Image (tube, rainbow, N blue to C red; front, side, top):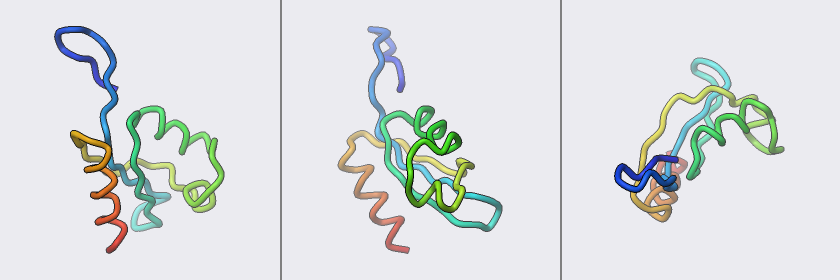
Length: 81
């Protein structure tokens, strides 16, 4: 989350991110509003699913978006490749 510069409050930031298990390995693309928390969850294997099954624990890329809808749209584009 980021802080509002004038109010000092936490604001959610839509983010598309890509994790991998190793160099030239399996990629996982996701969307979150709290990147630090989500990367921790991947590294700690908190959720069952694709990234846990394939060991995707290394953040390799992220993009910030104004809206969650825009972030989800971008994730869909990335997953189409």
